[in-house]
Length: 67
Image 1 (cartoon, one colour):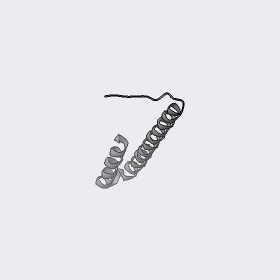
Image 2: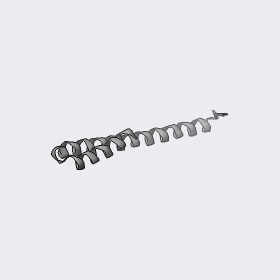
Image 3: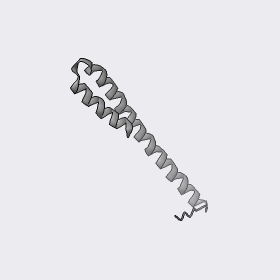
Image 4: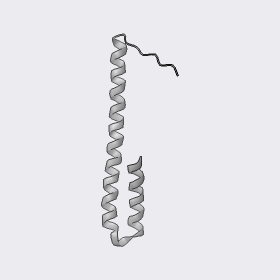
């Protein structure tokens, strides 16, 4: 989430400061890539956790969480 916000900030800076636009554009692309990577990792971890829970249920180790 922070990487996405930083990418938007750098995009704004590139428009505002044409003298350093190339540097801001590179930083924007790097931040956007980091944001996509973080989202993909979170998606992977969620599915890995769900798969483990399904295996546990199949083995009879069902968890009961009460909050």
